[in-house]
Every structure is written in C-alpha cells, then in structure tokens.
Length: 356
Image (cartoon, rainbow, N blue to C red; front, side, top):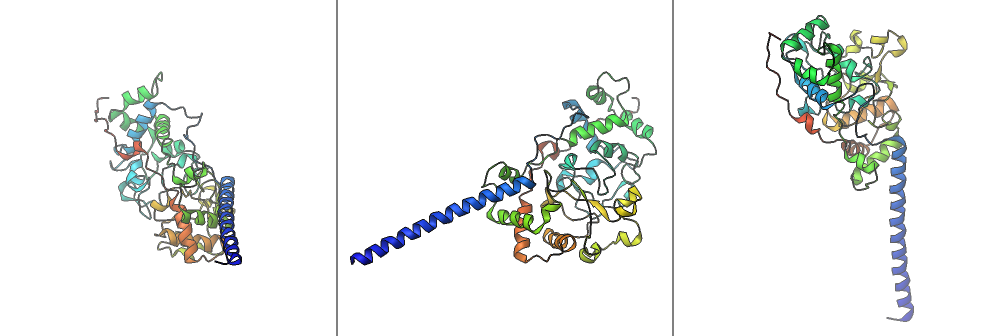
C-alpha cells in the first residue's frame, strides 16, 4: 500500500472512530436529557400511601382485607368491594359499566383500586375525598351495598362474627364495630395496594428498566402534550379536565350508551350542580392502564391504541401516526406493575353467628 493511501486509510478509520464516539456521547446526552425531562413531570411511587389522618396497624389491614372481600354486608349477599375491584383484573372488573347490587348497572366504569389513595379524589366526578369516605358511603349506595342506613350494615357486621377483629383493630373503643371503623379498615388495606412499575425504576436512574420503544414513547408523550394532564406520581389523577376540549367526546369514542345525551352524566356538574363543571371529569391515572380496559368513564373504547388516538384528537387536536401510537403504548405498558401479593388471594372470612 502506498504511503498516501495508508495515511488516508488511517485518517478514515480515525474519523469513523471519532464519529462513533460522538454518536455514543450524543446518545448518552439525549438519554440523560430525556430522564431529566421525565423527572420534572413524573415521580416514582412512594413506599406507602399511609397518611397521619388514618393510623394503620397490621390488625386494621387484616380486617380491611376481609371486609374488602366480604359480600354478606350487601343487601343481596353478592356485592363487595372486590366485585368491582378484582385482583383478577388489576383492581377493576373489565366491564364497560359495572354491575352492582341486585344486578343494577352502575352509571360509570369502575376504575382500578390500585394506587387510588394517591389520587386527588375518588370516582370520576371526584365526589369522594378519600378511599375511606368512599368505603363508608358505599354501604348506603343503591348501586353498591344498598343498605337503608348504617345501623343495618353494622348489625350485619356483628352478626357475621366480625366483632373480635374490630376489637383487635380498634382497641380501647367501647363499640368498635361501626361504619367509620369499617371505612378506616378498608382504607388501611387499600393504602397498601401500590404497584411499582418498570417506569419507577427508570425514574430512579436505571436506564435499562424500560425499552427503547418505551423511551421513544415517553418523549412523544411529553412533547405531544399528553403529560399536560397525565403527570405526577400516578401519571394522571391529580386534576380535573373537560373530556372533549375540542369536540363532543362521543363523536370520537363511538359511545354505545351516550349517557350525556340522555341528560344522565354531566361529569362533576352532577354533584356540584355548577354549569361550568359540565363534562368535567377527574383525569384518570395511567398506571396499569394497559391491563385495565375498557377505557373512559363509560367504557366506550376497548383498545388502548384507540384510546390514545381518541385523547390526541379530543384533547390536543392532533392526529397521531401509527408509529407514534405504537411508541406511546409501549411507554404506557411500562406503567404496569405487579399485583400486590396481599391482594392476590381472598382471605377466609368469619363464620356467621347471629347470636353476636
């Protein structure tokens, strides 16, 4: 090989090596920048959802789990928290509209119970401030347990043999079996139902925790504008927003049961009676969204990729490409955590004793 040719070859190889190094450094910089952007908008799940207002103990959690799966407090003997929030369906029930006591169809889709204590409020309309309030008022709901008053529900708990468990969970109380302690116990259990996911490991600094496709989807999720509402520790669930900012939502969802046109579901205005709350709903959390179809308050969309397209159209006025949707779905799949071990199996329940 002639000298000049050899020099040119060496220069070419060196240039290729430099380009490779630059490419690697550039990728590293991009990776770091992506993580930094994500950390501004999202936070890892905490280790616990406990709050000082509701002290916990193992006895309360044990009681709460039993009550969560207990059907005999309902007026038809078949409804429980777990009926609409099953571990088999990641804390939801896979139905568009859940079926309540005596076969009554609930007016909205049942959201997952997983991570729900971390949300701004409970229900799509936010009419329950905490999981404890939700649990207590469910006893009298005509759709959930159907009791005429709390005395009826408490009498059932006593007859079912729960008094020893209540006494252990709430010591030094003269009458521990009551609706408030029912709520505190169920709340204590629900506050253990957190689902750390690969995305949490990524936020904590493990770049290999999520796939390349999920990282592309994360970038799209942020740059397209999805994170404007779906942010925070639960990737949503921290604010209220109108569903259908740019057009009537049912035109995009193809709702089979258009409750809004019947004047039955007006979002938060149903509870607040304020015109400005019409079609305003709590923004759903997106944790475990890939495994909790169908989607939206009326369960009108069955597939996650279709739900992504609907949201882009209704809320952002954008039409996403199939490639964009695929990557965003990959990111959303990284939000799927493991079902908590304490939620996987129904516990043995007390044997009824009507002499208690």
